[in-house]
Length: 380
Image 1 (tube, rainbow, N blue to C red):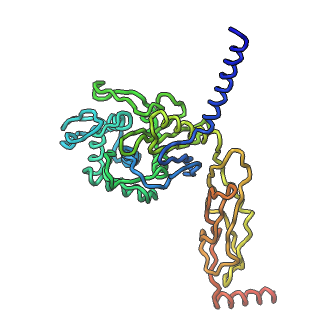
Image 2: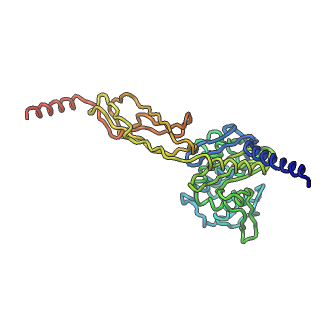
Image 3: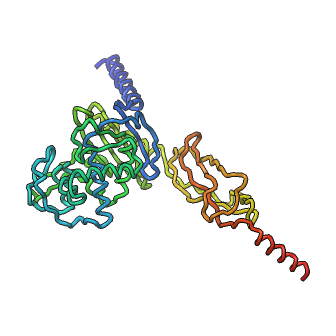
């Protein structure tokens, strides 16, 4: 081979390599919406169209799992309980484990069937055991969504069957996943790629291949349909025990979906950390009290909190807002102001400033009593 050809091949290899690196760095997430969120603080780290209402179909099952997990954690049902399938399983569409009326399965097997096998008949059994019927279970799902502050989410069924009345957002799905991440007993199910139920007769294979190929994976779900495209809710946990959640709605392909999900979670790992607010109470001067039995009351932070900030940012700016004075009576623990913590211009944590003690109102009886006491002291 001539020297010229060798140089030409080397040129293409080198330029091709750098083109690949450049493309990877600038790989834009092509989807209807996405969000990267830190689970513990619910901080949104990166997003696009995260609050736009969309239909995400089978992501419904994530809220279904919260209802189920709440009942397990509260002891209403246990993983070892054996439940009996009703006639309702006969009309269930989509993925199933072929349950028939009268079949018995433990809650453990049913939960595995839902998370790993996406089984709608298994979900029917659990939903009826918890809420009595599917309609009530859906009402419980919507009530839970409201309780969690998800004002842009509405469910009509627990399975994820397409319904144009339904809607949610990438942000709301991220919050649902953050809640699911709190149930440690669910993690082994989410991390399972392949398993069996019904005396090893039915095989379950997880659609989320990241459960098999991505070490930091702790959950949650992947789905696809013609109406809403490819969707992923992926959670990853690093060595510092920080959990980052990537939600993608409406990607064009499964390959893109998994690549985007891993890319976002990796951004969380490499770019962000969770720190404590650590604001000392000594920084707060006593607050003046008008018409009180004492002239001032000490204040403190109601609670120290956690904040998600970029790893290269060391200084957090704190803004304290309190009045010049407060009028008695004052209750112990009364909110009198707030402390806001900022990373540059981004609010990362906010908490109340409260009083450390109570102060009674000044009365004529108290003034007279105090005056007499002072006179006696002078005489003595």
